[in-house]
Length: 71
Image 1 (cartoon, rainbow, N blue to C red):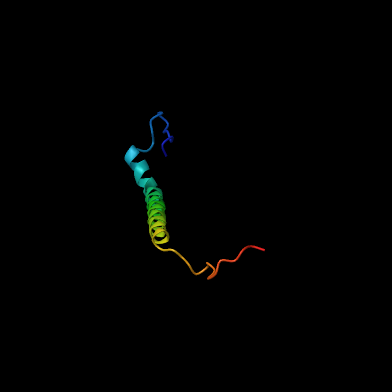
Image 2 (cartoon, helix red, strand yellow; image 1 turned 90 degrees about the vertical axis):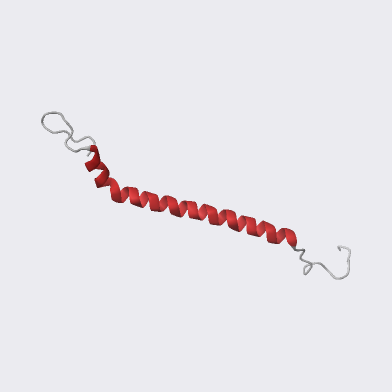
């Protein structure tokens, strides 16, 4: 629509008409960007929570009760 010319060489559509025609695509792009941003925020929160829980606890369940030399 931005490059459509009439017989006189003028643009066939105004800028506003072009933007109105592209509105559903802009809305889909905004929704996709919001989902991408939400995923990045969730990833950051998950990494922060993981680092806090792993640093606070010491897991002794996989340590042997008695020190044994390797064979």
